[in-house]
Structure formats: structure tokens, C-alpha cells
Image (cartoon, rainbow over all chains, first blue to last red; front, top):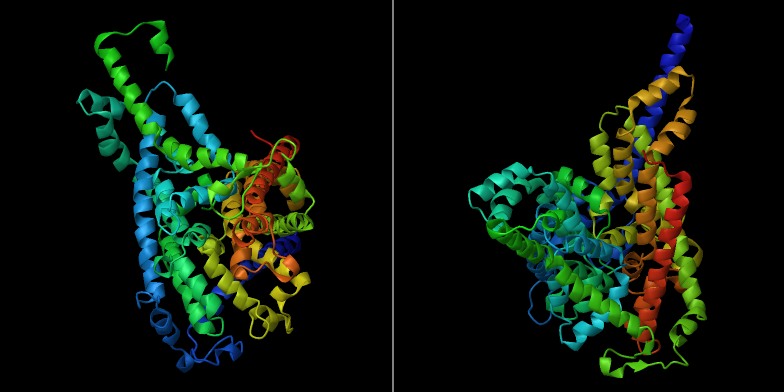
Length: 295
Length: 311
């Protein structure tokens, strides 16, 4: 190979790398720019004539204000209580999602522990049944569930949003079972010899050893619950019971004119999940790769 | 494991131990199954019965069995309803976002794979839309697509009302769908690409294979299980795509029902136009959707034998 050829080859490599960088950065911009646009729009002055805000890439710093956020948290009260609809929505969302995540995790993990480490008679068929539930498309349950809840006066309550989730999910059991199976049997046998019962083994050995796996699933469960739209849309009627997502959708439907406030709402809806994702990315990706489906 | 019991009868302490293990095992394992019984199996059976009944309103006392002679009336009505066929077309049209998202994700993952600096940051960025709620995403896209001050019109120098025109509605929704799911596909493709042994490429380079041949004969076959997984999951989700169409128009089905997907159609039958259609129709439609998903998944698995390579 002559020197000229060597230089040419090196040059080609550099060009290829530069093109790769450009494409990747362009794609990143395509993803990021809509986020940037809602952020700057939410920081614009919010007033009655807000319909005619021209599109500006870089607004002057002096033109930015947090008034839209003030508006969002104060101007739209729930009629019955007079409290801010968005704050009520945030409160309701946490009232629903936090117990759901905790109790659901306990249910899924005890079941995963049994499937991974205990011997019992119907283990095979029970696990097959559980896997089968993962294959039923959720949409088939939508109509009959609504009729059943309505018959028992459970619509417009949090029952349909909470109780089913508290029994744990098949995907979560499946994920945790894989993890629990990796805990060495010797540790469990040693604990048994020391007289620790099955519940004790679960609580004192399995749980502490599987914190990363539990976190991965808890984070996924929390984000799915926080973002849930269809279930509260169908079941919740009264304004003071709205979850955050429903509250935001409700008032952005009625206040389309006041763009900065609507966009402030979108930013508020996004911030918690994005923060969780950015800081707990490792767990998040682990969980998503196995369970795949979004709630 | 179970065999131990059969080969040699166990008595005394060991037997008692096995019994307690049996008891605790069954007790702990069945928690999610109890939930599945009440919140899946019962609704499932009810839904099946309902799809052969007529029911207007929400009171179960109004359920009327269609009778043997008219057993399939709900299904016949749905299959002759032009709106249903429109929703089928819309669903598959919207599903185009899946191949687009997968191809773009594969290209990005391949570009990132070669010891690329900043790939963690890029992957984080690509994945961002996936963690956002449908309400936030549709608000965002309503703004991006706005006629007067939207980003897209600003970039193109046009003044198109994307969401009010039947011809432009679905293309922008496909774009939005691909934009949202890109990160998920990138993460799984990247994971698959790191699993391809470097030695294969080195050997191919020595043999004089160019990058395209390497991609075609090494990369694609070796990541095919992931491609298959993404295709199956993506298609199952695409057939049930609905909430973003409902949310972006606040319950509107788009210009001339351009955004009416199959699940949106059944949602309308059950909740919005209950007194024209009713819950029986909605339940029947949900079974059609379920069987479509089942059929496509089976077809996917059958076809996969031709192109998916497992080691």
C-alpha cells in the first residue's frame, strides 16, 4: 500500500465518522426540538390574545415569564372544592399510584419467589396460566369490566384503577422470577437450617438481595400508572377525582386559546417521569427490555 | 423435583416439611392468579357472552340474548358496517409507523455501535418520548402541527392545517408514532448489536467483504431474534393503537373519521354512541380485534422460521 492510499483510506474513515455523527446528532435534534418548543412556549407571556403568538426560535430572556405556571396552578379550580385542578390531580395521581406500586410489587414478588424457589404441586400449570394471561389483549376486558364495575357502583371510584393492579402483574412476576432464580440455593438452605420460615426467607433474604430488580419494576410500574390515560378517562367522572393526566386533558380541551398555560401543563406532566428516567436509567432499560409492553 | 415424592415415600419430618412448602408455594404463587381470575377471566367470559347479545346503555338487566337464529347478528352487522372497514384500513395505515421506526432505529443503532463517544447520552435522548404520557405528547404535537405557529409549518414555510385535512392527518400521526417509539427500538437493537462477536467482522474484512455485505450477511441474521421480537410486540401494540388518536382531538375522530382506529371504533360503540350500537357490538368488535392480533402473531411466528436465526 502506498502512502497515498493510506492517506486516502484514513480520510475516508474520518469522513464516514463525521457523517455518522451528523446523522446521529440530527436525529437527537428531531427528538429534542419538540420538547424545546413546548418549554419555550410555556415560558411565554400568557394572556387572552395568546392565540397569535408567532413562532420564535430564541425568545429574548426578558420576554420569558413563569406566569403560565402560576396560571396553571391557580386559575383552574375544581368547581366543588375551589382548589386547583392540577394540584388536586397531582395529589390524586399519587394517592392511586404509590399504593398500587408498593402493593403490586409485594404481590408480584411473593409469587415470583414461590415460582423460583419453592416446590408445590400445581407449579407448572399455574405458571403456564400466568403466562397465558400475558397474551390476552387488554382491550377485550374493557367493555365487560366497565359493565361489571358499573353494576357494583364502582365507577367514579378509584377501585377499578387500584385493586386489579394490586394483585401484581404477570410480566413483573416473570421478570422477578428470573432474578430470584439466580439467588444461590445454599443461602436459602442455610437459612432453613437456622429455622427461618418461607416468609422469613422471602422478607429477609430474597427482598434485600433483589433490590435492583425490584426497583426496575417499581419504576416501570410507577411511570405507567402516572401516565395512565384510558382507565381514568373511562371510570372517573367527577372533577375532584380527576388524575393529573385527565385534569390536564380536560382543561387543555377547554382552554386551547391560552397556549402557554396548556404547554405549562404538558411540561408538568412530563417532568416527573423524565427525571425518574434520567436518574434511574439503568433500572429503567433493564425492566423495559424484558417486559416490553407499556402499561 | 416432584419425582422425589413418587420414587420413595417420605414420612415424618421431611414429609411435614414438603407439605408446608407445598402450602406456602401454592399460597404465595397464586396471588396474581386470584387477580387474573376476577379481573381477567370473569370479564373475558362475560365479554364472550356479551358479543352474542344486544345491550344498550350500561345496565346489565338490558342484556338480551340474540337467539340461535340471530346468533352472529352483531358480527354480521360489524362486518357490513363501512365504518368498521374504514377503521381497519386506518389501523393498518397507522401501523406504518412501526417499520419506519424500526428501520430508522436500526440505522441509528448501527451508527452508534462502533465505539461511539456519547452513545449513552444519545440513547437517553432518543428514549425520552417513550416515558412521556400520551396527554403530554399529544399537546406537544398539536403545537408542533399547528397551522399558524407550528414548528412543522415554520420549517416547511407552509400554512397547512395538518390535523384537519383527511390527506395529511394520518401521515403526521405516523410521524408522531415513529418519533415516540424510536427510542424503544434503538435500545433493543443496540443491545442486540453489542452481542454480535467482533471477530466475525474482522474475519469478513480479511475475506474482503465490504460494509454492506457484512451488514447483510452478519449483522442482520445475528440480530434477527431482536428484530422479530420488536415486530411482534410492535404489531400487537399497533393493532390496539387508540389513545393518542382520542387524546389529540379530545374525543374527535379526525377529519372524515381519518383517525378512527379499530379500538377507537369499539370505544365509540361502547361509550360514545352507546345508544346506536351498544355494548354487545363493542364486545363483538373487541373479539374481532383479539382474533386479528392472534392471527397476525401466529403468521409472524410461522414466517419467522424463514428469516429468524437462533443460535
